Length: 325
Image (cartoon, rainbow, N blue to C red):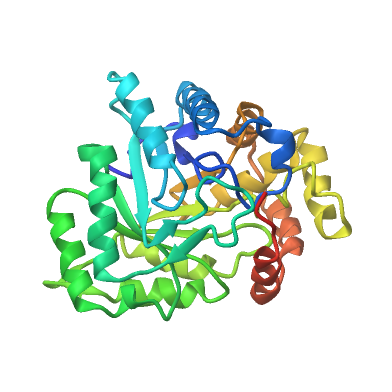
């Protein structure tokens, strides 16, 4: 399925990421309020399927998973098998992190990063075993400027082979130097063709530093996917209570919508943003997130919201302190 759809509906500008519901632990706060006390595999699978059903019913057509999101690929594959008539969704996954928490929330290490060719080959086989030909986009997970994914020609050749099979090759980025990683990726070619044609990056009202690089990626023909547009929950009504989010609350109050709708609408208003991911953990959160489709922010409001921006280093230091729960 193509990542970009001509004449996409407002809901098709949004995707659903399964990072928060493919495993029992994640760094978004409030999980004790959002998820069942029983986080067994069967319970979380049923929870994920309900959320996927709700997303599809509301018009969402991009679904985002990763090898490191616990059993997210497995949950999504089971949902697809049970709904053979669902053929109009786009599936993106990622490789480069391995899930190591053993289905625990108190594990010392939840995921391990490795961008080697060997890990790519192993994880592609694992992804294919679950998603088969339904895989539309395969991304290197959480690339930073020092990643071998930007410098390993053998890996690049292998990724280019996957591209010939009809799978879009992309990368996601993290950290205060996302812009450098995005720009480096845009320079990589194999056989005279750009290797990476999709970029997924963290961009939100608190961390907009990668914006200019994403605009460049879009202009170069890449699909741009935004993750963590809610700043790991910091821009939701439940947590947007301090002086640093005053502008967000004021704009939301005037618009008559919750803070999350404004935060997501502000990202969707960027002309280079093709897909904005919701990381909702409940149907209620998803419904609230998708109310962003009804929000049209004027330039004065968008300018007012720039007051929320933090230095990139401070934002990522805060994120690194978030606890897995």
